[in-house]
Length: 459
Image (spheres, rainbow, N blue to C red):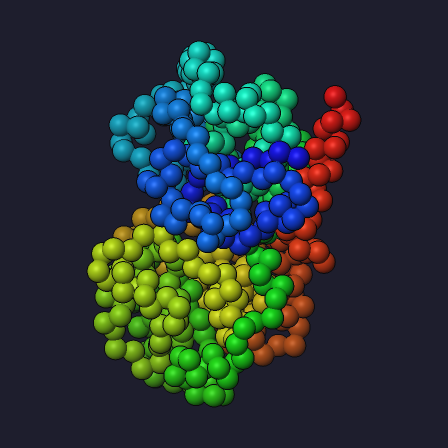
């Protein structure tokens, strides 16, 4: 088969290219091409090359006007007047990210009759712009399959759905992260085939995207395939690497990309330990790979903590943050796996690593710094629907604000000592991420071949 895989963002490169999950297609003799936007160096800081992937890398120019139209239709959908809680919170979140003029304009455009006229006018303009480099490439090369892993928005998402449908080319879309089906999906069209993480995102794709259930496949998480392996270091080696006592229990503070004051949180936890409010545990701080160490990340390396150390593989990243040169850091999932395998419990202000810790059988707490009004990104996203299920599960302790942090950590430590915790965490994980015996890579190769064969029979 001739297969084209379109990627357009650092995060997708990290999760689907650097991980090698598509390499299995090559080993089965398929002609696989990795397609990037022509302005990829501006969008992707770590460009795929022969050292990162055996896939052949090509570029195709994006169409600026079509992309601008899709972006406007995307925002129009977010500003649409609906009255359920999720829709209100999503609108509020996107409104906080826009200039006030855009908020006014899209609030007007989203009015029912005006909205319908606006959509028709934009779709009419898109029809006039149908001859693009992307459409010509698809017509000329006639791939047997197009694959698009993404956040369900971006340079290629809407155009690929549109052009592949017109040209009768099978297209498989793959979600990147758990918020994609509920708040980040594209503007007008839905894919014919969407691979999601599990039960939660299957329901979200049906509810929020309006997709038919048969077009949504629960498929697990590509980037978590590495967690099937044994860690590369022992607990003794891990503690030695971080200068920690051999028998110390370790709390991992995993940073987020939400702009909260992680330095202040670490000082509070350090104080709780010193004052005897918590047992003599040690804390390892691991910043989010594109969170810049939180609101005061430049000063993290200058802090004087008694019970907190920096996770070793992220020190260079924090040095770049301090120097003002940090971008998105494509942290190695093998490193993440080593860390999560050798800690005892975790705290994080809303990051996917909460689920990753649970996959490792490690209790994880959601810290909700609701009293930090300056953390605008956190305030914008904390009420998003993909977090709801997590908040309703007792196996994930929650602490809302500084006043609840100490008691929340006590509950977390107690949870780690209960024999039933590992089983409860596994059950919770199965709601978010469907478990499979076989690797994501091998299953995807099977699925791609079967999908194309099925499409061929239907024509």
